Figure 1 (cartoon, rainbow, N blue to C red):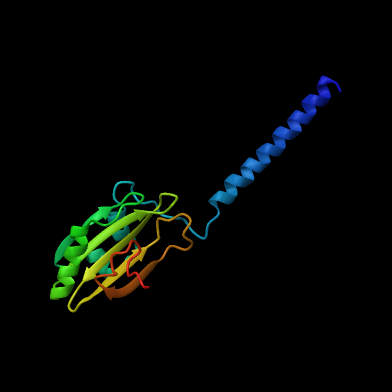
Figure 2: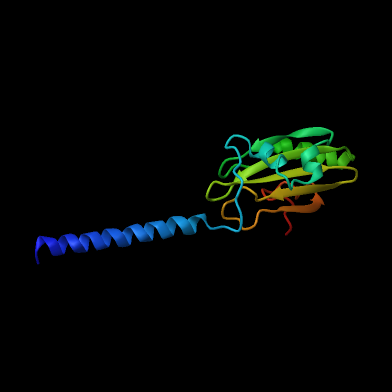
Length: 157
């Protein structure tokens, strides 16, 4: 086969590859809505600023703060912070704790735990920054302080 035939096939192959690449890029952008991006250094503050953030999260007027932690892969909430929240819940004091942890892909999931009157803790969690998490939403759960600080809050077993 001559050079013209080889060049023609090479051009067709290049065209097919270009179409495949374009379709792949477009399909990667197709989602049910835009996913807001959390600043790399502070997904907790970014979650507080979301338009659909619960009032308790946005206001953050709980008494004592047990801390805010941006965790890396495999890290856990520090024991002192968990104990702080448990102590507040046990004594009926108001306190809050916030944390984020990365998904397998590195997108932050953000949770806020609030101890109030009584021993229960209310946990709000958002997947708003998870590009693979489906529709961005907030969840709310209530549990005792011993199960409130699993990575996704309120571990039910």
